[in-house]
Image (cartoon, rainbow, N blue to C red; front, top):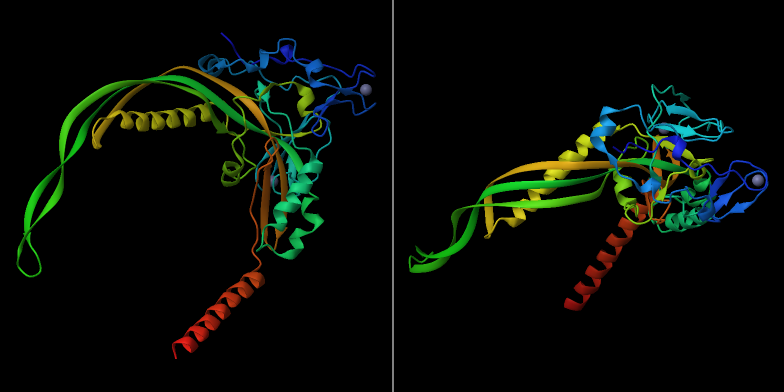
Length: 377
Ligand SMILES: [Zn+2]
Ligand SMILES: [Zn+2]
């Protein structure tokens, strides 16, 4: 039985020069000592067993032993604190005892200390930040200048002032699903039908009909790394736009060095809730896969009896860059994938610009009409 990696198995790698706790540096793509500046390539700080973080955990075992495999696996110098935003309810955790004055997700100043009933499940793996804050500021500026309808004052540097790097929680599930299905398979055929047209003449036409034939079959499918986000802080609509995170190929085993100095969002959709969402999703996908197996041109009364087996899960962290700002009374969020760099954001529209654009188009249309009218005369 494999349960989530316990903090004891997570590698601890102090700075080889001064013994300080290393931190992940996105620009250098290496671990860096914040005290003496020593750069340690990640390979050297790897977990003792490189495959250790990639282990899939047995879902049943984890659900029946809810207390195992928790915590962040921290160094003695780490001081983890959790705060919850009273506005968007996101829970942020910090390893260095320094707590932000405003919520990283929505910018609200009303944040309070969060007392968790138990520690969060230890992530098995994560995607470390690949895009540095410098690169992010640069591409955010470009992104904003391409937003034609955005008010000008948003295109100034102030926008990137609130840039924060945050690790978001995700659950990923694997499962083997076997299904038996039965349905009525519909085969199209055509009949010639006579009718009278508007003038009362006899005409004939082809009409499509369906012949229904009972059909049945079975299907096996392996679902690999199906993702369920556990975040409360990032709006789902934006999250979908910056996915995918290359979690099948580029995950690294979790190690506290990667998250030290970065904010980590604590999941609020827990394993039990995520597992239910995933199961519904698998069954829905299975229904569609079976539907595709039904022979003929169409089908009805599809009944799928599916068995989900060998379910495993991982808890992983993925990197995002966040910018939030208020515009008028609205609180707006811009999110970027910290690994691929893709950006999605809410933006206000400048009604002045839009009005001028609409007026401009109307003017052109009027001119065009005048010219055409002139030619016609
Ligand atoms: Zn050092
Ligand atoms: Zn918030």
